[in-house]
Image (tube, rainbow, N blue to C red):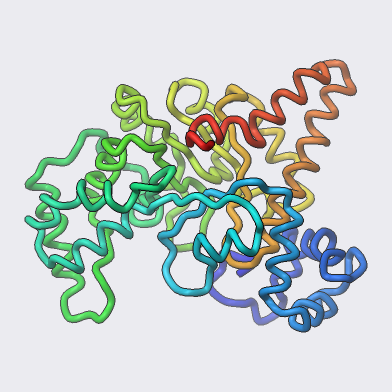
Length: 344
């Protein structure tokens, strides 16, 4: 789970990478090992301590006060909201995945008409205590979609096709129809909560060139009128494009969360590039940790080091004042998220 590849390499381990080296440097001391402990020693210590203890140690060492947790991920391999709160001793708020709500309703009703009539109410119910909604459109189709809302007939046809594709299978319907996915996006806009979109780097289920957020430009022009915040997540290697969108659209925000941990010692370069064009009130910190708690720890440690390196360098050269630097770090590290997601 340290790589987006579908299986382990026969000639190497995921530790032989930037993220692996960063784990051995920054996570090893929290497992009572010296920095740069070998991969074998790290794995032995992790196994001996147990996943629950390792998770507790690493999450609490991140210095994170509030987590926004996508609860739409399948399986029982990740902590739920209560489990994450207990392990981290932090506040945890929910982000609801649009596709998950849609698939649940389709499986329950088995009817495109019932889906069309009931999805808005089901989404409202599912997000009663949530701080945002999320779409994985980039995985299911790509961002090259028409900007306009789909018609009711298009949505009905997409739901029918989805139900037919699921016929005879044990698992529930999987939403991949582009018209149906567009409908979910617009329902998310109508709900009024910040709308998260995975962009850029991810596993090979997506076509990376179709996950470039610049492809959303026409759609963003339409959504801007609603004033709903659109949160572009991760974005690497398109973080410069995301920065441009955050500059030209009032309601667009972005982060480089997934990249920060995975590029390891190169995180300063990614963070520097993310700070080039976008206004500082439009950027947010994210670890995007999924699976091993190591990724949460790396997200926090490497982001702090990158900020100290990049912004600290600007202060040292006299480009920025210390006061301005501290204000920007507070904005990106906490205040922007608290404002946009309306956190107490």
